[in-house]
Length: 228
Ligand SMILES: C[S@@+](CC[C@H](N)C(=O)[O-])C[C@H]1O[C@@H](n2cnc3c(N)ncnc32)[C@H](O)[C@@H]1O
Image (cartoon, rainbow, N blue to C red; front, top):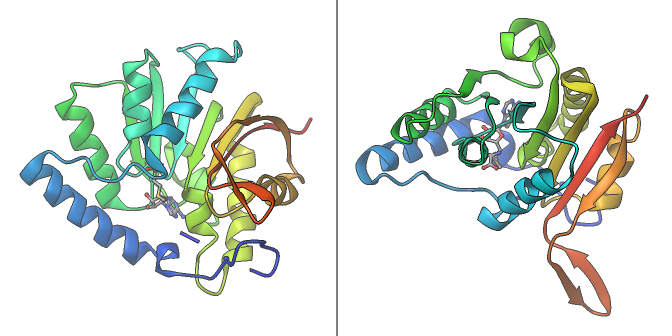
């Protein structure tokens, strides 16, 4: 994935910002799951998922009974792993029907029953009234790659990101946290965009690279808290 003049990285709109792309992807992945048991892509790799989950486990602010919402959950592997780690109140939403079908099929095969899945478009204007899962607040709200995908929407990405911010603000409980993992935006860029309503609580360490005397991260994971 890769977007706008505000970006240090070269950010251009792309097919990854379209619903058609995701619908086709998950149609393929469902077939592959049915034929070969392959769960499909874990975006940014299993390590980035583990780093977020390990941080949650170590931070002392979270219990396994806390409510969790995964935004743009895809195949739901983050939630599956959370269920394996003992979390009991898990919800995943994605606008692609195929993603939700795949996620439900994987959970069923794993005999995991504590995950509630719903198809929901997180940038639909009335989404926080329209979809039951989005009418309430959650202690832990997770985004891995979904803000990135929304940032790639052809023609309207800035507008779409603003709607997404409003949606996320509505969903994170006052004492809750928003854990965002991005490969398109740097820490500074994420903080710049989200600062109207969120502040940095902690940056989850991710591997860094050195190039031309500068260091950077290929993936950025931040824990943000809603501003009072
Ligand atoms: C890069 S994938 C990440 C999937 C998953 N979070 C993971 O880490 O494996 C981005 C996901 O966001 C979903 N998505 C994109 N725009 C969305 C929207 N407006 N509402 C809900 N889901 C969306 C896509 O269908 C896709 O599953």
